Image (cartoon, rainbow, N blue to C red; front, side, top):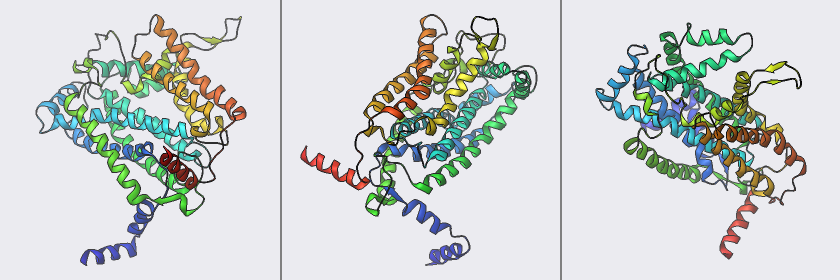
Length: 420
């Protein structure tokens, strides 16, 4: 009774409980969402885990080139449960990217970027950019060999930007080489960016609730029969997905905590010793392969005029590989959203998935021999898929008939299952 009185008192002044009840409890969700829709809520949970563990790690970390490596070792050896917090944080970054990449591929397959959800999709791409920046700067903080040299290589890429490139690099470094000011800048930004991601994720959810979730049919909600309350139908589904995820996460934390990392990062940073093979974290490898695929200058044929040097071309290609996702609502304008009813698009979607995996594999290999040509071919197909293939299919693909409503699609699948 006392709780109800307190709740009513708060509700009268700040109607937060009615808001939560409407948006998280009674929120009408399409009745046919499958487990691929779990990844959005999983991403939010992992983000909270990363922020919580990051705050605890920051209490013991020293952002100074003379002490950073040793402070991380102290966290691992001397701080109570420091090893557990750090393993949760480092493996959490990989889990975060796995979940977000699956979330993106689900959106690509079911056409979740199409009207009226274009802004929702674009905000998701901005979140991806911020995630990548946060992860890169976090990888530098342990100040191991791969941290130092990864920072040196990636920040040097900005020097390829005409006119202002060198100034940008100097600003990032805080001097004339990767040193203590660089580490301090990256530490501050690595701490700040997750809170920016939280803010954008909140806007992402608000935009999602304006028109509701997309669904496997791609057909919009028409009547009440097409929806079910989010609770308990999808809270139960999300909790089951969370349980499976936590089991996989725990297996990495307790049995293979360093499997997704690089052993060179357990060697203190040494500017005088260059690692034999500098590679970023695995979740950057596809884009790293795109960067390395541009090995030639772009200019006017049959002249010596160079318009874009190879280094700058690689930077543009790498940035474009992520940025092109934001243009998807205007590259794929086919009226049917879901690949379930677009057989030709569905086949090419799986070609694209294979291509992305090939880019990831090539990105982890040395930039020599046959790997260069495989990377160039895979990069060419990556941009061909978005810039040529999708616009072509938008105009010419014959789609299968759509169900009249979400409820009709659900009933048809039930009948098909009963006949089987």
